[in-house]
Length: 409
Image 1: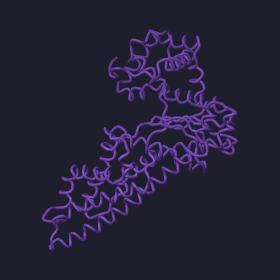
Image 2: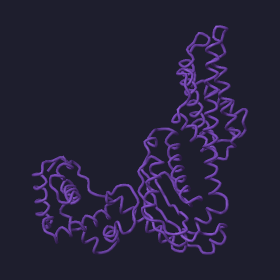
Image 3: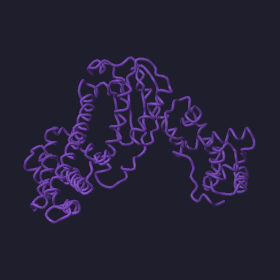
């Protein structure tokens, strides 16, 4: 597609940095709400989304196709952020229309009579894209505002604070009546690949992750959950009328993880309002135990980690158990082998495959462990002590042992 003797897509793509600056200048001059945003944000998030839109215009016109759903994700996330900042929806849509108009002026400035067919085609594709943008941006903005309104209005933040602190009088001042029961969750989120990218895209990915988890929880409860979440996780109080089946809660966590496209580790307990503070403290400890012992994502309860939980409590017994492995502290390959061997159910071949060493090397290392500690996994009584010692050690060091050089012996 060529207009004014130039291929539209490559020309617009090459002009997008300069044109983006011009669009931003118009936004600041003609839309006071944008002029009131922090300059850092205007130069960062706003300029980035404008340039992203211009490149999308170039792709759509060049390849004569509508935008894909994935290509509109950044616009959705930008609209959600503007909603959080209180920017009116009409100002956002006006900004998109202004950008579209300036884009069209740029590519059609030198159009001649012979360009009529390509001009008509370009207009048709731009109109389709403008309709897609309006739909995607409006839906994302309204979804974000619905979540924000449900949290900000009606005293939900006050209710959450009162429940977490056990403030009985605060429950009366909060506004909404507390539910009969709450599923008290502690969440730990993995990082989405987009969060590792430099620039504002990582912040967008974090907000998107949190928003999608909240939406999944709200759909399950049929009303907004009480949440205190950031990019790494946090606390959720889910109002329930009766104790849900555990499998149902597991499916909820799995569904939230799927929606956010990140691994999610969580712990939950269903309690009455007065027991919320203790339940939240306990679920946070369970998540810490789960992560320190190398378990995978999913939903856990106390019964899933009873031994690890108990041995992680501060006590002379815990410290004494951990000291049983003292002779191995300077030999990380032996500690790593012991962790792996016990984790593989004492199967030397499986452990060898995991460690990428020969099974005979596993046998040799286990003999060295027995010689240094006096404890052998082959003796049932010693095996119990070794397992308990590893759990106690993890609670003190924060996680399982990793060998510095897995292939050494």
